[in-house]
Image (cartoon, rainbow, N blue to C red; front, side, top):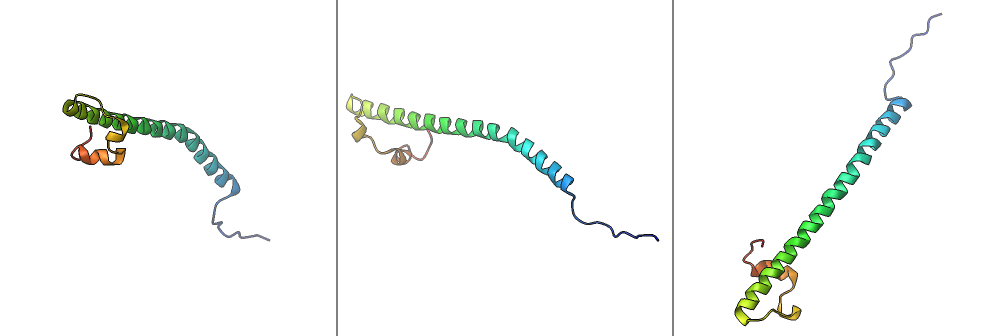
Length: 88
């Protein structure tokens, strides 16, 4: 008596576990790299904000012969407009 088996479709448990392990390893390598890139982006944004503040202070000091108090400068979101739309 011969049994004729039908061709199997789908994935075995071993194949799924190997794919999951591979993806896990890739994720373990990618997350620290992404955190580093994200941290660098935050630092660069902070530097740009400080550069904009320096420019505003210098412009104010040229006009008034003194540095501005915090209340005399516009809020950070308005500073972009005061710089003519260009980054510092």
